[in-house]
Length: 403
Image 1 (cartoon, rainbow, N blue to C red):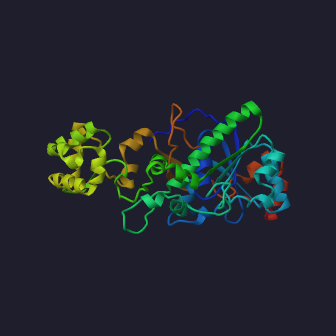
Image 2 (tube, rainbow, N blue to C red):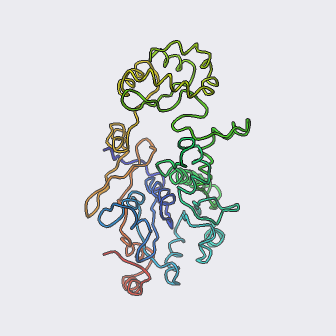
Image 3 (cartoon, helix red, strand yellow):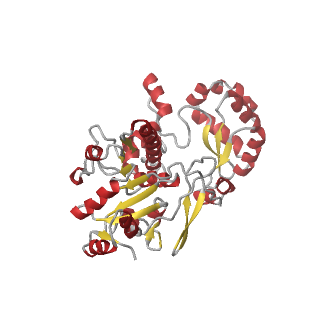
């Protein structure tokens, strides 16, 4: 696995990370890969709820947590106490970015809402990732990737018509909203170089859900036709989906242009389909999708999916086998791209998916996910507390120091 160091674009940038669960945690993990010093602030006695959730663990920490929090340092502090708020205020005085993914308004009582922090720290970039966005009738409502796949319309075009509603198998809205949040945060930091002022950066699962429908929205507005769930097939192109062969399925993108459609017909031994009145144009093929699928699968039944992919590759027709996640993680593509980073801990190691971009080289996470309170003492010393004060705060339950 390739773990070459990338230029540290955010070297010297301090991120105070109040996020938990998936979307916010992934955003701040990406920032850590770019060189930011990310301090994950967690409550003593449990920390981020993801530490204890899921069905598998590594050294007592959920794999859900360690896979989303590499590169960070953990400060365990009771933010509801006056002494704990003093710790946070000292940290914020040095910070460049404050990140949170709580329900809008829920940090007001702690004085950690945007307006309060902007008044005290005008240069601070304040990052919020929420379910429905910071404005609108559902702004104060919480949510998860599953519920937002439903609310955003994504679930309505996923699955098979007439079957039960189906979610996308991965938390695409969590991850997508996090990537958008990082993009906007970088833009805000660049803007701050000119203005010396921070701003409120926002992203949400709902907004990214709408963004996934970008290619559909204009057509819906133009025609009024709302796409229905079509399984693996496209509402805009045909043939474009998964097709049964003699053994397994092959995914075909044979409608990218008419030349590809003609090559596909030649490849399967059915050149007559090119001149079939039902299939003359892409619009015709969409109207007769079921008949087209039947004709293609009849021809594809003469060989296996593996054999067909080899044939299509020689003919320049885009096609792939449906790989499972385990196969992808072990693939040469993932290895050559350096997409898997092995993180080492005191109790062993684990694999973390590397950032999905490069800056000449693939960025890496500087350390494994932290134990709760692992860096509390180190960070408090850096904020001007002495050892006696740290011991006093620990004994009072204001902070938690990992042993």
